[in-house]
Amino acid sequence: MKNFVSQRISCPHCGHHIHLDLDASMGDQDYIEECSACCNPIHLNMHIDHARNKLELHVDSGDEQIF
Ligand SMILES: [Zn+2]
Image 1 (cartoon, rainbow, N blue to C red):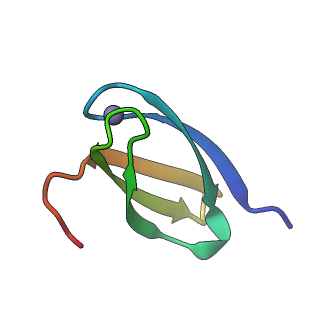
Image 2: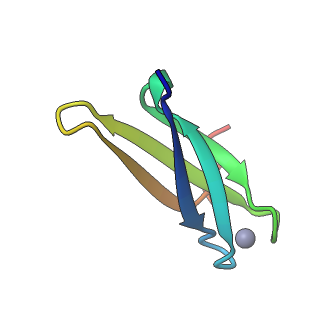
């Protein structure tokens, strides 16, 4: 079964569009991706809604460093 979901997000810093391949089989994820255009950290919060079989992705600027 293929659980990869392609999502397109915009960088909260520069608006650059980034393609992400998310592995929905891993469950909820919270991580930092670096923008390929401006190199600023992008905070990604992925939530799997199992009830509706939907993937929610929240994007914000990763200003508060959690790592
Ligand atoms: Zn950017």
